Amino acid sequence: MIDMKSYLKAVNFSGHPFNTFDADKEKNLKKFVTLPPYFESILGVVDDPQPFLVLGMRGLGKTTLKCMLKDKLEKDYERIMIVDYNSYPFTRVKELNEVTLKDHLLEVNKLIAKQIYQKIMVDNSLCKKFKAKDKEALFHILEIYLDEEEKEEIYPVLMSFFEKIFKKYPKQKGRAFYLLPETDELQVVSKGIFTFDQCKRIVNILGYTGCYIFIDRLDETNRTDKEPEKAGNLLGPLISNLEIVQNGFFSFKFFVPAESIPNLKKMGFRNDKIQNQLITWTNDKLAEVLRKRVMAFNPEGKMLGKLGSICAEEIKDHVDQFVVQKSLSSPRNMLRFCNAIFAEHIESAQDFDEKISKKTIATALKKYEYSLKVDQYIADE
Image (cartoon, rainbow, N blue to C red; front, side, top):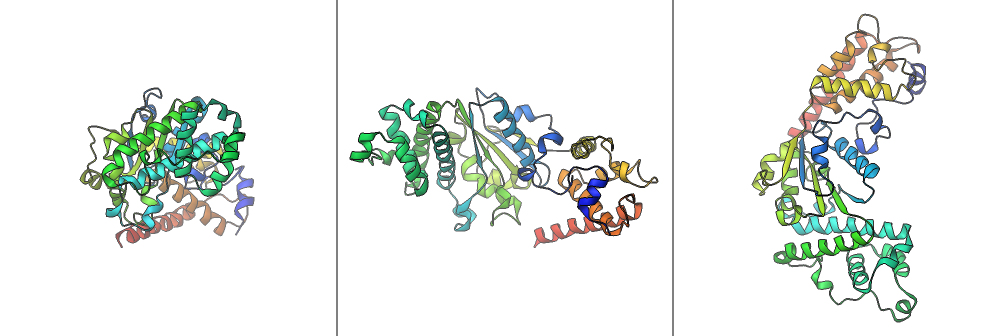
């Protein structure tokens, strides 16, 4: 048996290329990601943003795609605000059939308010851009959606000397027009639109020309983790409300498990009104993902982007293709299989020069395929 860290160093890897299955936690994602041909369609025309629905089974790269879209915006479009909506705390206290549009909008508005707060705290001089009416709207948004600690931090920054003395802000007057936790369900859409309009006004003053809202990880809540098809029930109240999601300033990008399509439609989703795309992977594209990942972690390039370079002579010319074929058109499965191969090799190898054998690949395949069956069993339960 050898240890993993030493082995990776011995074969000229800068780290473990198959240790992370979560795109949000992957530090080297930009170095090896393979973009789908519809990447630009999902991004859209930044000056005229539209909602877009990305569908894909688990492990097909929805979050990876989201991360690359965010990276593109941050790199090339500094004047676009990015909101990452991937947590749904209300599912801890509500059944899915109790989730409402208001639940979603309150969370999205909290995230927008936090972005506003962070922007101002980084650059206090932005406060000078707010006129009295703008400042009033700003205080309403912050008062409704920020945590108490955040409000205590930002209020002194925003208030003038006399406002601090006379405690002129935040005013209560006019707050009833905004979306509040106690807002009646019949008024959610109208007050939600009003609140978005006010947020747009503030965000514009801060220098942004638009806002992309990424909705992801819908199948990772306590209500949907074992039943990804129910992500459609969770998202339904939001994506089915065209008055909200077809807002010209806020561009909603939904990343949703494909299993949820029937429930999405039951909840009122209109696929003729919102552009959508199903993620699929060919073996050639998966082979490209594997090659790029090996190259990213092998900076000296001695492996030529191929796992075969560290495998026994009898399998070196075929192992990469074999891994791709056994991945079942899923990038995540490919990572899991490769991870299993590495784990099995360090258990059986006697020294660092020993090549990965055919027997090691076969044993790793059995363990990998067993893990897939376990996943299916848990899902069925």
